[in-house]
Image (cartoon, rainbow, N blue to C red; front, side, top):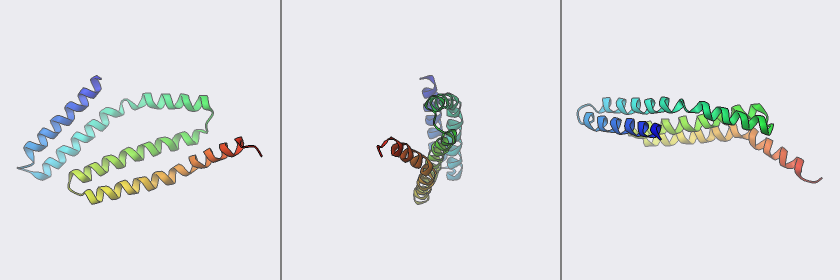
Length: 130
């Protein structure tokens, strides 16, 4: 819970700084917003090691191919990065560009998910009676 308070505090301070600076220097307010977002992003990355350990254990127990492990984390990373980038685009007034970043990310995720879908279909086909 302490981590959430820190993230909220950083976000509120960043928003207040942007509100104060925006009437004077719009370009600098955008920079403050981006830096605040990056600080929050780096702060939350410290918690990812726990997630990696848990997923690693799940994959070891389940016997799922380790190459799918990498694909799943790439897909998650692409999702977060495209959402973060689209938010920056929206903050700078380029919502159309942000929408295209999201669309591109979704298409890339779909393409990267094809091996997972194929593996699931193979497992289902093996379970069906012949």
